[in-house]
Length: 174
Ligand SMILES: [Zn+2]
Image (cartoon, rainbow, N blue to C red):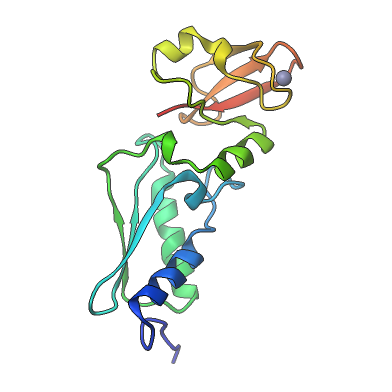
């Protein structure tokens, strides 16, 4: 019988152990970035019976990836011997690109996706009227042009860099 990690562990240790196991789960759509980098992984709660609750907040409601993330968390915890856990989707407050870590933004850029630009305060309609404000992840030029509001997924917009002539995805502000 498999030993469970819930026993003989303090709540604090259990919480850290769970966080360490799930934090490296990649985003299904952008595998270079983890659910911790994205800020999807919100909290790990241990109750007085040492039961585990993992709180996640979905990014874009249009992204079908959330079911997959829940499934991956479940699989990862089971494989690491955790029992008595549940995964809760918390929709409010809504996820925002502000929750993305600086490490996450660097990873996106290195992957060739322009990270959400903090300077964009109004992120929907207005963003697309000032699309030159999105710097190219390849050459950092601001001389870029919006090609399509939707890139490879609804979370991203497709841009073209006039400087290095490369297309790139922009992770839309949210
Ligand atoms: Zn460029």
